[in-house]
Length: 215
Image (cartoon, rainbow, N blue to C red; front, side, top):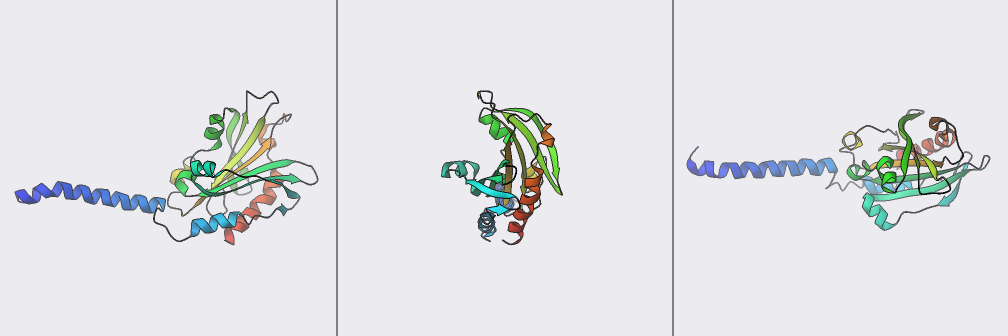
């Protein structure tokens, strides 16, 4: 290798390495993905019915554009359902976006940032073949208790799971959805895992899966 070749070899190698890492990162994050799968998944999420089984839509909630921008979410489903027989109320928040931003900021981070204190969990929770995480939070500044339980997990195909490192587990997927199911624990002294709204989840999760499969 002559002196001129050696002079340009190192800069050229640096350019190659930078370009290669940029391409890999772009593919990993689907930066250049124009397949439309993310948009299709976001639209399919909105097709979840207002009524299923014993549950009916009580209130359609919303997230502001600013909140969605902070979460880097392409869209969300935010609803409160009520059981027409027992009057039990459950809140559902589902966010859809690229795997990178959607895989981070679980309730253990979000609720603590809002001033809540985690009083139980997080612990694993298995619902049928799905794996979630479960925790209880309380707002110490509230005089009315304000104690809530949250079940959460991620999915890109209708099968929900809660891996220890979701960012790595779902890397390379064209989209990812994050599900929060929340219910009140005020005046409920049952063990946390016994308070899970199993009837709601048994009816809701198949409906959500159908939306995935028909998108």
